[in-house]
Length: 399
Image 1 (cartoon, rainbow, N blue to C red):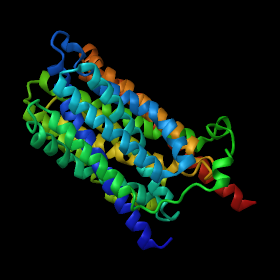
Image 2 (cartoon, rainbow, N blue to C red; image 1 turned 45 degrees about the horizontal axis):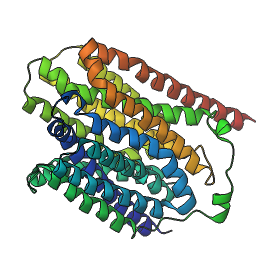
Image 3 (cartoon, one colour; image 1 turned 180 degrees about the vertical axis):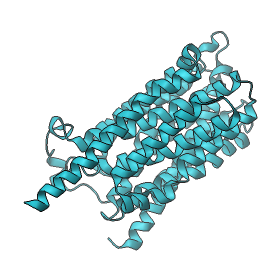
């Protein structure tokens, strides 16, 4: 595979990532509001559709990975996009009919689409060379920058398109999902060989005992949990501290930029300094974010703290994904990637459901303190992996 074809495939995958995150951003912006509109009596369930989307995403990860391991990435992504389009159509219909239960079912379908699409980053690893792998993963994640602007814009411009408010958003999402399927059809992704489909490789119990696997999963999962927890509760905490919605929206926008802008260079940094050093740097940045949050409740504390945890997440998630690709053979990748993403999105689903309650119960400072041990675990384990790797290399050279 030539470097030109690799770059072309990575660009198309980044475009799919941009569309996928655009749909996610639009749904996050509107689903809780739609839930509140459809629920006449019990407004406490307004966020249930969004929570169900996260749950469906987590539950889809393993079946989606095994499905793609059997039939290939392209078939898997097109299947996921088809499920998403059905969810968009059902969501629009549910809003027009004022049916909350149907809207919840639509959220399960769009969540299943998300479960498929989180494998775009692993598809980037499949279509790239070993030397370009970390850059390919990073570039695909960089496609999410487009969604930071396009998602809310799509929601605003289509919210009143139909007689029932927000039904137009879900009709527009059908177009987004079909665009994903269309672009995927032009990507040259290697299909699994007959041997890969037949051979399962080592048992998961053996693979998951590898230090690299454990640290890769911990880095991506804990990094994502810390970032999503702090991001979710920041608007609430800023409101308690007397800041306006405009203030908190500016902080969230800067945070999203911090999450995805580094993706243009993270792959280069991994190649230059090594994946372990980038994971260590990511944990240090997340730790610095917590320190800044604990040092005060001024606007700049919220701003700089959330930007730093965004950059730290980028290093941990990209680095963790890169490190995971070193733990399996081609015959094992479907089940290993599925298990990895189940850990990540299952944990994030719990965080999404509980973050608001935790903030309300214990407060902003306590939330940061609860996240600190997770950052320390990633820092300590990656530091151990770095020095144990050096020792093994030194012993090998001496022998």
